[in-house]
Image (cartoon, rainbow, N blue to C red):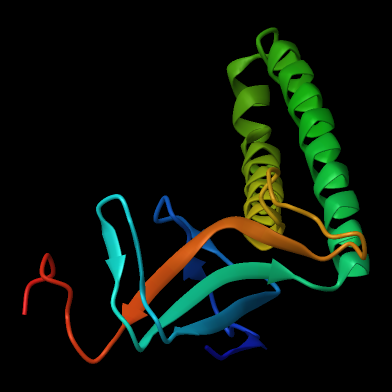
Amino acid sequence: GGGGWCIQRPNGDVRNENGAAVCPEGLLRFWLDCKTGAKRRDVEILPNTRIFFTTGVWDRPGDVAVQKDQYQETVTEMENFMERTRSSRSRRENQSVMERILSLPKQVDESKQLELLMSKKMRLEREMPPPQSPQASNGVQIASTGSLVIKGKESAGWLPG
């Protein structure tokens, strides 16, 4: 049989196996032609069937390293921010009503800052390889799951249609 592959650069999020939006550097798409067919247990691939596979790929290890550094910096910044916020809250408990009212703009700004940090953390999580992703000796990583489509001239008996 034959086959082929390509790396497609997505221009938006794709869904992972849990239905969550992710944005890998690329999508590794490849196919295999199974001329003779195959059967194992309750699965059968009929002769002359093409099997398509798709999974996320991160083929620029330098970019992944930068993302991991940015992610760790963001997490540390969030932790520091949360600690400062807790300290501010405890100081506010001893303030008068007027001082509390005057501190509202600062609280709104703090809330916006935290929202920006959380958004950055979530974006980096969508873009980085999952922690369990296999890694090749050259640093390229692929997602440990993906999708599979079987296309043949006829349908197996257990498929509708």
